Image (cartoon, rainbow, N blue to C red; front, side, top):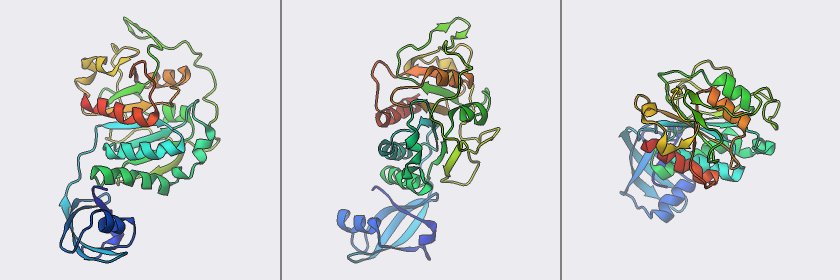
Length: 309
């Protein structure tokens, strides 16, 4: 815990009394005493310092001085095929720690239907995991997280058409070369595009849950345009069907270097139908290489690579 995060409604006259794990951390781990200064911040608000006014066995009183802006958010938004619940908790914390501002959890053919019944997908569960990431990174702004139980409506209806002014879209896939490029553009997978949507999708609507860490446009079912956080993109006609991220043509990045939209699939990868759907929406498939990574390894690695470009 590298920052003490506080809710707005906990603060009275710039003073807060803590009686939970934060108080325990301040007393037992930091071993703070009255007069000590701690790093603190208000969730979805400014950050700064907190002076310890009093401590006891189960309670800590702090006086806040929070007037600093939180760190700048990452330029990459994340689409993630829903992983196993035990892994999802780690992935959400990692993404929040790395500054991702928007996370879209979606269904896929290789996603188990039972994953959507996890209590971790409740707003409180998602928020707890995100806060752990913010505490690690020293940030205060929660990412926006949306859960989409149906893959095809999410990709085809909720993501807008590619646009030159949008961010670069990248599709991570563990296979070395699922498709080859041609002179006129990427060659499509040979899977019949008329097949049914991925199996295992619950009958409920696409947007199952939404946790927002800030006020502003949200991802909702049927939305025809995304906000300015990087939800529309453009596929340059010369882009390869798949390549290492380091070989994605620089002309794809030159005018769109400020924003990315990165899609990471299940550990078994996306199926051909899903890759075709992503390509229809302007995503450039790329491969990390021959090694297949666990999702909780792939997310921080690929986010770091995308941000490094």
